[in-house]
Image (cartoon, rainbow, N blue to C red; front, side, top):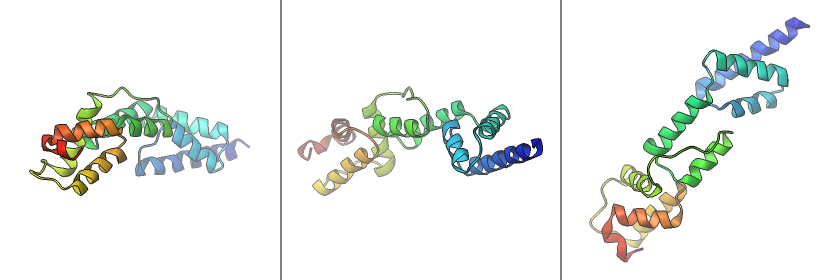
Length: 155
């Protein structure tokens, strides 16, 4: 009987390591995946404990990577960030800087320097981009004005 349990635990760890090589997962996500694959709660718990002890799984490390991503690499709005953290079973993060600055950084990263002139269609595209990144509409409008002060006529 012990051999069967040990074998299942090894399978749970092996499967978990394969998933973790593909992308970072939270403890919550990995637990849900293992349970969905039919592993028992005790095997799942033991596998998670082993992965944490060995340094393969760390919610704190994942949390820091996500904060870095959503503040610098892919600046996003509070709404998107909170949804992503909740989906992964992590508490809401403390965010750097203000929302509007992240929105301006997102515009600059995606579109570069603002053009001298802009068609209403382009302005709408920039606005939609910010909304898709999780910024509220008022924040998006203010960020567009900060990014390109000549847009006052279009907003």
